[in-house]
Image 1 (tube, rainbow, N blue to C red):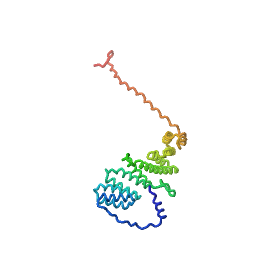
Image 2: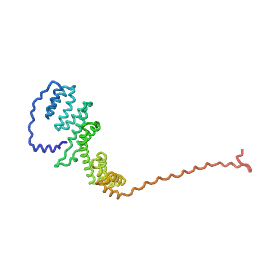
Image 3: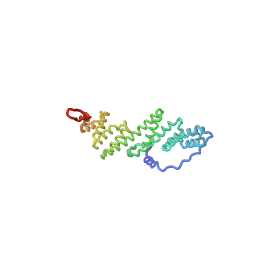
Image 4: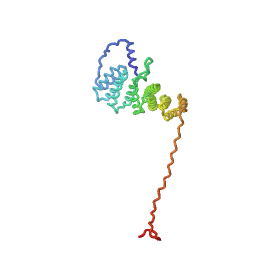
Length: 295
């Protein structure tokens, strides 16, 4: 992760005036792509990243159809990464993935792309505000790229390191959401509390905030006059964390809620009325002593 710009500025003040631009000897290029690539690798191993960049750019531009050209593209990204130029490195890794999608090192490039953004996540410094109060864009981008890598290449050798970095970023974002949830709780904005609690429970579950999120959600629903939703959240807390930090308080709130009314029995449908009997026509009376209709 990168120190903040403020930290670098303070360090620069301590160091004093910067010296003038460094004079570098001219690079002596070789004839073949392989020789120049090897010279670049030697400079990279010696941590002379600027010289390595010159060799790799030469291979890329002068020998674009060489088998070393894709490797040179990747090594340019590596040089920027090692120079702590993480945005430049991320662009270079993305460019390698786009230009060489079937290359064997695409999984590695995806991993390093995520790590480049992870390295830009602000660090904690005792003399600065908490890191989760800073702009979360870098952290969110790191989460996005690391998740994309893990979904595409779950068997890659760098998966354990990527998972560790991803969990760190998710915890940082969860801490930020928790901070915002508490901010709104103290200012009595229960609907905003419910929203942030749901974010913790869906996007950042299992990172240590579940119990409080459920409790605060139940509290907020009570404040909103929604006892059924409050009961649901508090009962979920008691079931999932019977000995948890907020369980006793949840039970106390549950005891204040009115008993859940039993669901009314379905009304019995009335027996269908028997259909009215069809009137039987009465025969017309004939002359005395005769029955039936007179023809």
